[in-house]
Length: 296
Image 1 (cartoon, rainbow, N blue to C red):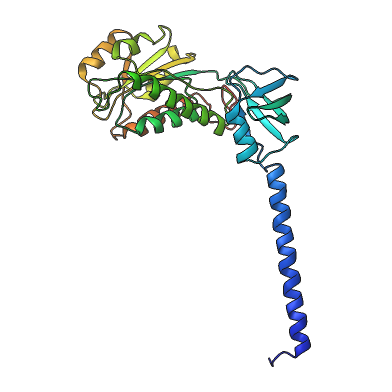
Image 2: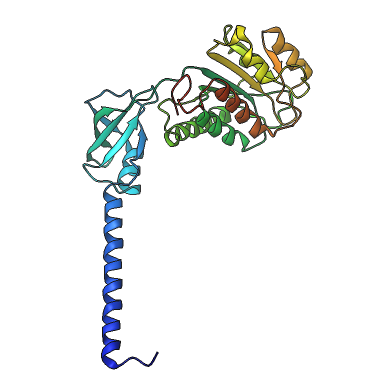
């Protein structure tokens, strides 16, 4: 191929210029569309119960998130849920310096959970509880009770109890928002052993997981026909060092069954999530039809 003639060079430069100009216009158009309305409709939380057709006022945090972070404008569409099983399509009416006002439209179907799972989790080492709360909330736990076990390395006392509870509740809220759940997992303040045991409903299926148990598996308990219709399940998971024999004995006296997860030892941040997943699977929640609560 020979050298280009002067006129050919000019044509080539013009073609390249037109190409890059069109490319820039395309990018700007795409960016402009995403600023006005994201491809995925944002989902936000209302601390107040919602009612179809009404206006919903949300505070400064949601104002900043929608207006400054997502750069949404008046007329943009969002979805809003209230943690009580209600979720609606909504349109942004207007922003003020301290709030955003939404107009609620059509209801979004979110069927209630048909089984209640309570996770009593012994305090693990620092940082791991955040992971457990987020995972358990995403998997559908209704209530999480952190408690101090004999072998818990981490200890929380005084003002830190309420601060930690607030942090974990915020994590659970974010998990609900991201996992498209219309219900929010409740996280209680850190309890002692006796208080935690007293939280268990008398009618609940109560399981305490223990690495020394070698007779009963979680599948054995869930497949027991006398317990097949149970809709309330309460599980206790120990810390890194496991639960003591005395704790197991006390739990058995108030109706808990000691259960094994098999020969494989799981990390504390994995155990609770594995247990909840198994329960959901055995109850049919992870089936293609959504199981008993139609979540999936």
